[in-house]
Image (cartoon, rainbow, N blue to C red):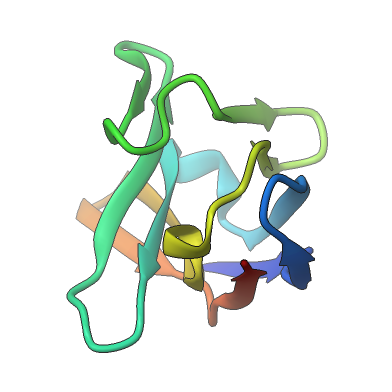
Length: 118
């Protein structure tokens, strides 16, 4: 099993920046790709950014040009640098990992709250 723990969420003013972190533990050598999703109040969870060795990086249109996803394979960490934050970026951000261990899996962390004030 893989366990994911996010950190870095905070209250920030519009135009500010935050860096989210996600640390994987357990069978992290089975992970093929990782990413970030977010869930705004009253809305469905949506993809923010994805990173994999075969596809590189993918971003939601709302994140392009403002967010950067990166992964440190040495310490099993995933990051999301978020710049020029907007109130509509408010939500709970979840780290996820896709991998294979006897079968394909996707697992999520517990989430970290990001609140952007106008």
